[in-house]
Amino acid sequence: MNAASKYQKNSAVLSKVFEDEVVLLPMHQNDAVELGKVYIITGTGIRIWELLEKGKSKKEIKETLVKEFDVSSQKAEKDLTAFLKKLKEKGCIKEVSNEKEEVGN
Image 1 (cartoon, rainbow, N blue to C red):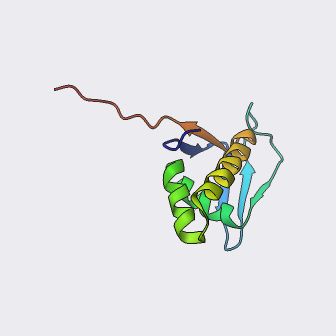
Image 2: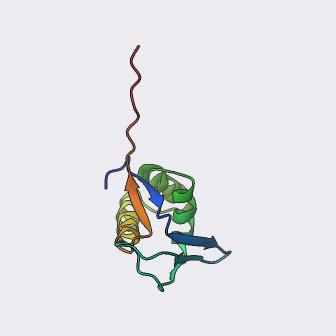
Image 3: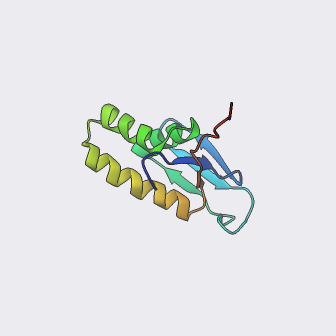
């Protein structure tokens, strides 16, 4: 998980953002997602989920958290890394390539 990493919501997970929580509901069972589980995201996690859905990189999310929540860069990095790791372990997100294809002349 480097700073430029981007993540994508697992297509097998339905998400609904409410005012004070995000509900994640696996719709299909596969190797990464356990059917029948419901995951609830609250607090700062709601903002992180919104930013993930907008395709923001880990670095962009961290910078947003520092600005919006008046937290140190180190604390934001630590907490964000732990949160993303949990989402990956639960199969709710996956890391996607951030490399751009170069076009020759």
